[in-house]
Amino acid sequence: MPTGIPPLDILLERGLYIFTFDLNRYLIAASVTFAIVWQLRRTGLNARKIQKREASLADMRREVAQSLQSVFVYTIGICLLLWGREVGVFHDVLGVSVGLGVDVLILAAITIAHDAYFYWTHRMMHHPRLFRFFHRAHHRSITPTPWAAYSFAIPEAAVAFAFVPLWQFFVPTPGWVMFTWLNFQIIRNAMGHAGFEFFPRWWLDSPLTRWINTTVHHDLHHNGGFATNYGLYFTWWDKWMGTEHPGYHEKFREVTGRTQQIKAESCDEVTA
Image (tube, rainbow, N blue to C red; front, side, top):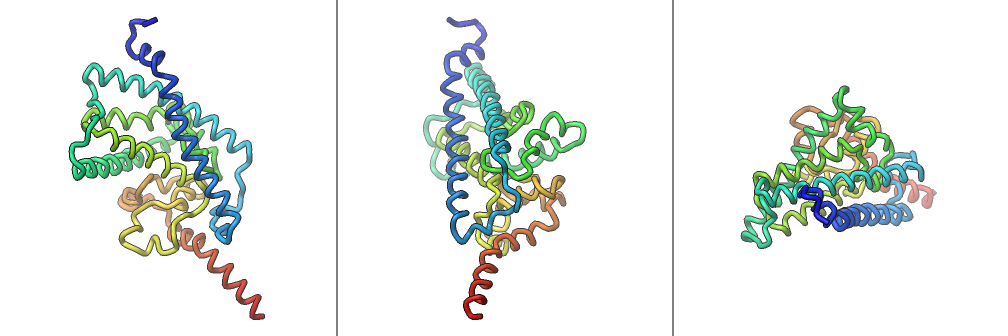
């Protein structure tokens, strides 16, 4: 029965579907990333695990519980967003492409805009007066796992979601572009918290790739670089604002060089 309160009616009618959809995005991204790391750690790449410390089962349970809480916040936010579209506050998601070239430009723009939004809101939440209420829950993961991708307190989850209505207030976006960006965002988030470096050793030496974030970059933020490395997809803002961890490049090369070191030691043992 309708309540006469449009956002609440949307929540009652579509809330379960929205919650299930977003929960599945999180579970698929986190579980696939976790499984890939689990498998790689049973190969010669095991040395690419960034920290010696192992996340406990209690750590992972906490990360999943807080992520479920975030999905609930996102569900409420999406219902408010849908109502906002109905009354004309936000642009509706376009059902058709506006041309592949334009679509790709919009996809690039939303990714760059989100990275800037993430950097500045993330840095803001590290302010001593805000950290306790917004961001401390996330930083309980000193050795993060992919399950920490959405592991936020309610206020931080609200801040994270707020980018979407802000973007749709200004930019009409094709549905496939929004869907692609949403999935890219959660996959990169899961990778950033994987505790395992996926990228090759030469990544920071190439001008084509060195500006793209790595797992080491964000792992340092959780363990040893609390006031550094605020970026999500790119390292631009950290470089421009002087907040990149001074030991980032050295740590990346140390982690990605471990496999070569192990191979060299094995060869030495054989020849000896």
